Image 1 (cartoon, rainbow, N blue to C red):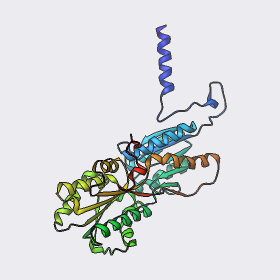
Image 2: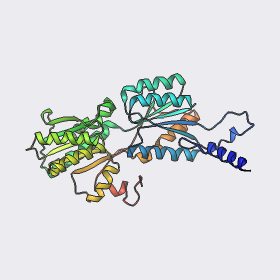
Image 3: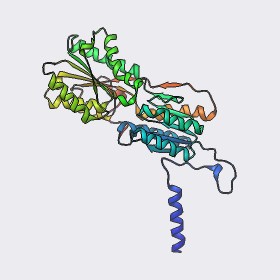
Image 4: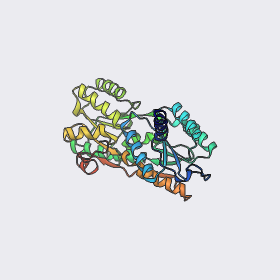
Length: 335
């Protein structure tokens, strides 16, 4: 009797194992020779220590579960070599379609070579992969939105004058993603501000809050008389580092920070400070909704219908004036 119970327990563990979720497959019951009809989707996430990426994964899992599709999740760990290994592993697992969230644009061709050879269609998230359907940020527009908000602040608070525009970049994300930072300048110019080269400083933040904090601290030390510094960042991680540097230097209100992503790193302190801090706002990307946008593309692909080459998020600049509309404090998506 004990032996029988142990066998049943082992079978239960085998059946319950899953990478993300494993739906029941009525066409693959014992004794059936019919091939499985449930699509098997691979999803390589940006990296699992990142709040933004966790929300993306959760949204993918919800949509796959709602359709009864199999979703196999792996972690790219924000590393190009890992992304290549994950691609090879997922191909071995026999996926039918791929959702690729790889931040290292330099390895995108190598990743796509693997999927192309295997005949697996790919949706690439936020970073262009040659030959894949693109979904994600309209980086050029997102940068302009942040820049226009920065110009409004400069005009209303600093009388239309500023000392520097500091742009915190992330070179690994590639040239297209870089426009979300570079176009902050364009957005400020759209609102009539003169932004000469002499006032623009680029700092590599390496997508790391500590790196950004150290480098902004160095910049502030080198420019003690600058009291009107616009900081445009690639995401809230580096924005938080920039804010910490200004606070530590006792110069919080010498800077005005305009960021991208509108994650918990920005939203929760915004409520804590009731909008009264120098991190003025962040462009929304709504990672908790990525699955809602990506899986309808997959629906078309599975059905053999035509798809577009590019699908973009409808970005919104989020600050104290509208934060409750998009991120109500009693219903935050990461909670």
